[in-house]
Image (cartoon, rainbow, N blue to C red; front, side, top):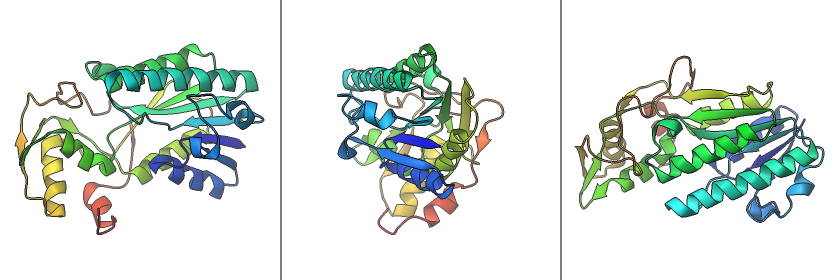
Length: 251
């Protein structure tokens, strides 16, 4: 198959491109640097010619409420229109477990709009809801930093390694459209504040963790159901200890 991966040079995109090429597919790693821009529309028509599957892994460069909404609305409309015109047979998007539950977050509101555009497009589709990536633990810590303390919710999370995400995206790409959502998560459920504390300790970061039930997660309040999957998710193989052990010393 010919598969176009939007955001194909990013963390998940590059891993997914390599996996799909290893399976023998023709894969285009599309990004603005390669002349494919979902915001301006540049290169979209050409990239879609003869394409069977499109995987949308693009992310907004800004998480500011207005900017992130404009990104996912514009990118989604342009991409889906180009796919419909070209007769693409399967649209796949990577989204977030808990999107529909965390609408106080501007980012989650924008992801919900993206998902709604997909459902309304008439294209066969699959939406992958992933839990948080281990690779983003540093960013999560930074989001709760107040001086030498980091305030984070103790709510449950079930984070996943990017390699497991890429495996899941690859499996969905070579399968039939779900016309619905599949959830993916890591093998270990743990409190967010506890996990970030483990991460910082392994890095030798001396800052303290404050488990604060009122701490917001990118603008949204959490409970133990907010960021964890429902029944029968696809579970990754890599737990936190295994993931951290595989990271470069600089991580």
